Length: 473
Image 1: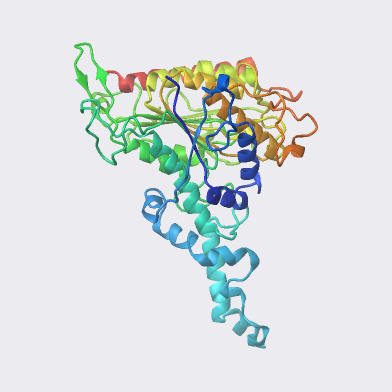
Image 2: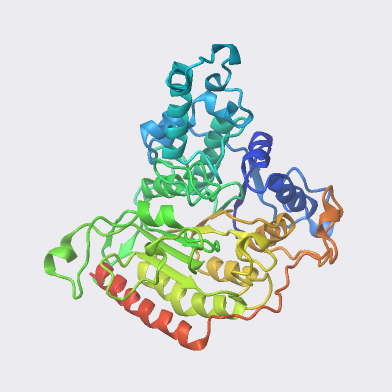
């Protein structure tokens, strides 16, 4: 039976993405390329009789998040500031604190400095610094709407995966929100999602809202019951487990922090530790790390076998990571972690800033779309796991290459073969000089040598053993 694939999109979401997502205009280029490949319902032309069964992703309209949705992760004070309509005017200087007439200026500089409008301006600037609304996260028109729609798009996608049906119930009985097995999809794609740097009370790294954490939280709270057969062939239930895999070139700092399990595990585990609640979320970030590379965070260091939190995993790579490095990391690290954790859902963040040619990261990675270890291959490996999959965007600062990468992923998830050349569409000229779909690696050296990769594998093997111990009967 073909997989059910949903593609979350709406004109409002795309329009806001073009304004608020860096680089501007990326959203339109992504969606136009995917539409030109005829991968979506409502955009596919009449097909010939022999091509009737070509799989298509169902376009699903995104819905904005509510304030109560956002409060599942973000603080009240942060939302009060971020969703204030005045922040939308801050970029063009039209806010009330900047509109005082020069006629009110006193001859006394001290008196001028302490005037109420100036105090208000200083207060606003202080709040902007506190909540991160500056530098790489400036205010812009429709900021509040952008936050609500970006968060809502990932919540929409996550909700499409949830069955809300216990395996013990009859076919006609449903629980929770009433979503049934027949309504749920196997794969949900949201290329506008993936704002993995936004913190609970601070914007960061081009990210204003933490949609990733909100989406995982929705899956974690779902009423999906999973059958687990023990040696006596009895059946019990447990909460769903979610594995988050972040392949953006930057460390997925916010999801890692949000889902770091509050309980710690010693080596070896104590009897009381085996009885304590087990993590339901595993985060795995494969990213570039070097001095000064964003985000500068000690949590991005390689996770050691002795870690007290084995379900929070960081795998840092050196410059120029190629498909050979990604293949080895996938087979020696990600696959064993997945087998030990046994997730029911996988959330895959696919920032395309790791692709060759992304000048913002200046050669931090040299990933490509073809070959073992390439983008296509990694998606194919994930699909072999047979679990529900939430696919999100993330970074990607070469607009054409990002569109290429996400179009290739969309086609791979559908089991479709795409043409070698970029189809004609509104942005076709931006794919020069090759006008080809696939992204090729550069000649940059892969500095992840055998000795460094062996060290990573050794530590992750120890982590895998710890995870196996946590979930053993």
